[in-house]
Image (cartoon, rainbow, N blue to C red; front, side, top):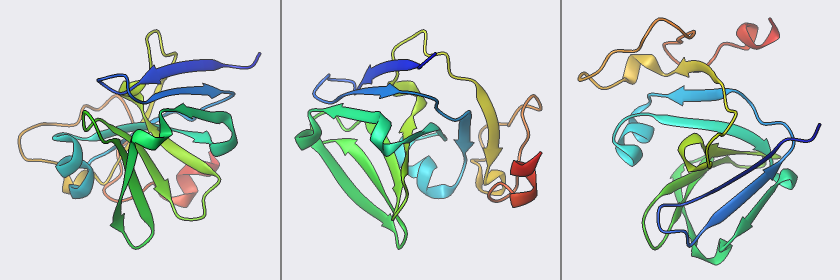
Length: 138
């Protein structure tokens, strides 16, 4: 069955719809994600051709590194997307989806950079940097 999910930013100026499979939720604790969201980034990946954005003219993109950019609503500031240059997938903030989202937690990355004011639970795999290539083959 083809999975369908909908969602939006805080003010509703940007709405989204995904069709098809999305990845498990990745929790990124790197300093950039913490600065953008105030905690950690929780996102799922979806094929770009399976994402429809309404109000796309309200999305602003910020080049946060040499290889990626972050999309957010220009009205309310909601963080919405993370896009690696040249990728055919886009990360969509898990919190932007309407509930029930059907999303499932996957793993934590860049745990060495996490804030000093919280702990990461032991229920999901946690990696000090990015997810090792060997972890994705199991």
